[in-house]
Length: 493
Image 1 (cartoon, helix red, strand yellow):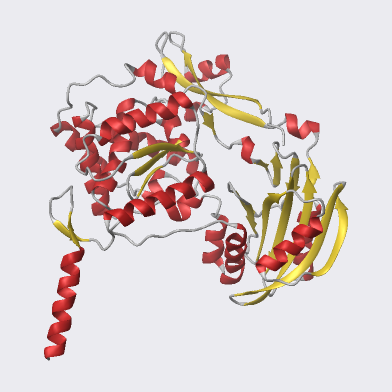
Image 2 (image 1 turned 180 degrees about the vertical axis):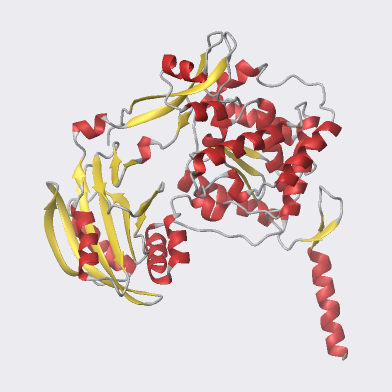
């Protein structure tokens, strides 16, 4: 009994030492992560975001987001962190915070944000998560996408069935899969409250977050087409009717401070978005159906029809419909002989290459081999192809589960054999889409505006991005967001 009593007292002492004063509530809470560890973890994760997701570098826009974040952070209840603000190179509308004060908004989010007050509401919300130490109070989940960790993850997915393969298919959206926290309902309520209070103290309409959520809801419905979107703000920040009602009601109780916004008016805010990339980034490669084209590296690769594909910053992944096979495409440093790259891979991965042979694929020097690796449900077959092209060596890895048929294995081999240099017609057919701000004619409809300005957004997309109804009649000179497409001009490799 005495020993049990001592153990109990020791546990109480440990828990007490792990208690910290929450800067938002002023109450003690159990957090085993120190502020120093929180900052270090955030720094490590920020490096992953830059590497695996990428950051948007538009000097005027990035400095604007940082200036807005800094203004809001001055009113944060938590003063022991240094806040950092950046734009994540993500197609989907999203915002997230890492431990220790690293906060991101995606370019997809900026494209549909309607005002500085809305953006202040979103950033204030993320500051609220940092201030309340929500990330520090949850278990950290991370996914790395390196050369061998990706291969291992795909193999686990093929062997592990539907659930594992679903995560494999999402590896390109690394942040959505692991770096972004998923918060509980109470944490969302708290971040809403703190964010709205911060926005009001900084001089912004605290109803901005509610307005943004309404736009985001319309956008999500428009894009869903009966399927769940991936990597969106709703995934990591569950939105309920109760949340929307609460933020709207709270906004009526808060009085914004008297302050001049950074963008002096709506037109000035919209001007900050001029030239923002919308949709897929051609510099990272794009899909035309099942064909993947990379204009900067100048090649195309055909994946099997009906497979689920994901273009990540470090790899392209495709998973078969029944999830028993997968293919990855990865790039590496240039070598004079692709066989050298094959041998280096085999040594690092710990696999034995079989039937290795030099060949030509698409007129390019190549090396092909097969290998086996141990998966969760037994031995798996790898179909490996290395191709030297320009200043890089590309590896196409086909992975088959233990029950794959000969025909299914042959399909993997055909993917590697489909690698080709990009043709002039393919290169000229690759478009990039950028956001532009235009003025309306009096009484003009969104359809008429689109036809006159070369808008590639649909009427519905244009309406959502501009916070309008689809049948709206526009005022003379009214400033609106549209998207134009132009031929992508790749950088040389």
